[in-house]
Image (cartoon, rainbow, N blue to C red; front, top):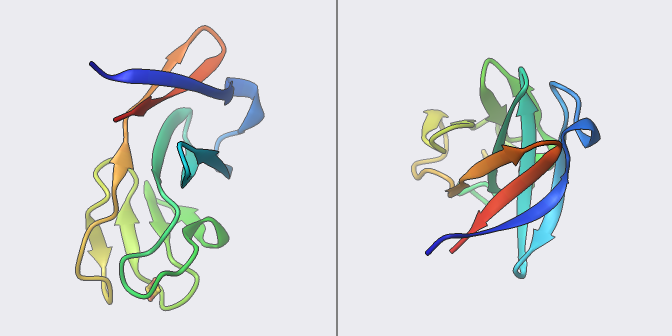
Length: 103
Ligand code: FES
């Protein structure tokens, strides 16, 4: 059974903003893209760049180190040099609470 943990309120992140949370010993990046919340590992699969230092654009996150890009929803690579996707986490919103799925 999937457990969800509340990580904040919908008002904590405006559209276009992102923030990193420590969840279950992992650094998880939560992004608000056009009013939808996405969560993913805060670590690039290319060479361990910190994705939260990067940029959000077009439903993707760009790594600040070498410009690799990942789809916010699926974690798939959309621009090289990364060869492997990043891990994503399910997010749900209940009322004003933003909740993250734990495995
Ligand atoms: S470390 Fe992210 S693209 Fe190289």
